[in-house]
Length: 119
View 1 (tube, rainbow, N blue to C red):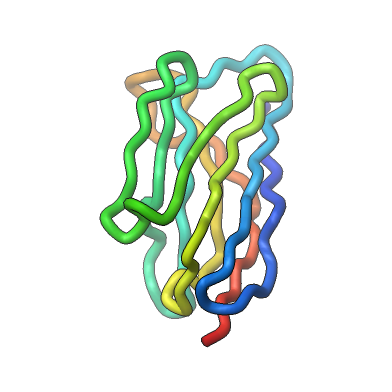
View 2: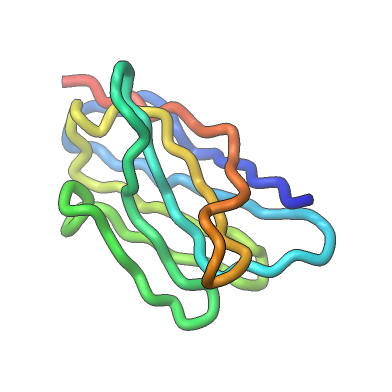
C-alpha cells in the first residue's frame, strides 16, 4: 500500500502564493508519475499538473501555466506544487496522486488539502 499526504494548503489573498507538498510512503512501491488535481465546490476533479518521477517531464493545465511550478525531491519521495499569483478561482481541494507504472491510471490518491483564495 502507498500513502500520500498533502500539506501546505490554507487561506491566502488573491495574488499570494502557497506551496503544496505531497509526501509518499509505503512498502515496495515505485512511482512512474505524480499528478496534482483539484476539485472546486460543485465541480468535477480536474488535472492541474504532473511530473515524471525519473525524467522529470512536466505538464500543466492551461489554468496553471505560468503561475504554478511542479517539482519533486526523489530522496524525500515528495512532490511540490508552487502556486503563485493565486486567483479566487483557484479555490479548491487539491489532491496528489501517483501512477505506479506507465500503463496505470493514477492508482493512489491523497486525502487532499484545502486552498482558499480570497478576493
